[in-house]
Length: 366
Image (cartoon, rainbow, N blue to C red):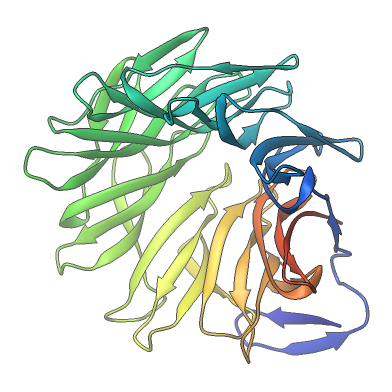
């Protein structure tokens, strides 16, 4: 049974077949009892983390129906977070000394990326060009945003403070993230052509950039003049407050956008509910499976939105939202699932609980 919810006037339909044709399929494990899919490319190749028969969590690469163990850097733990269409994979692993290090896996080899002089580094994503972005400790132990390009880890600097972190990067080389200032506040930044620039706020002291599209438009969260955290859209000139779906005292956050400038995120309304939204052409449309909590994780270039939402009565299920409809993707037999990424062919990946209580990575295809 599938629950299909039409946004705006909320109609619930019970059907025996899926409107979008999705069905969850387990990707298995590396011999253990756990797996979680975290990234997918346009070819449908999947990466994530899975338990081995020895009880260690290792990064995996799933292709052509087979899950491959990518190994680790000596510390018994690794996790792959993203893959591009070249098959280049990035993620993080513990070293024998217990330090967290970003890695690049390609042509059958996992290569440590090093640091900016400190002990730890963390990769957050990879572009189609093979640029990796994330953050690393410097020699003073301060966190700095970085780009790893052609064998070199580049320090992106900071906004006159102690910390910075890169959260997204587009194919044109623009990086966005957040940096701590000398005053102790955090401000959104964009980095382009070797220079880090701060974004304005919505009138308050704080901002955070979460995503950037190919046009350089940026979304995130900023404090407004009333002290409220609100989702924003930045077009390179002005920062626009998206609002909170009519909730006077509500809060909101924008987590992602596509090249069509469709923005997705969440609203915390006056009643304490957490509701997903998609924003386009000045209109904010709610996304929910009917419960009080919804988490939005991504949007495709076609406008398909994914995440996880609480059903009336308790369980949390993965969903896909498109053209005004939100569909429950179901589970692999248990009472929980969440969708973490979607590619341009509409393939969705994430994690679901099985009937026995263990968790498995899944792929759902239209």
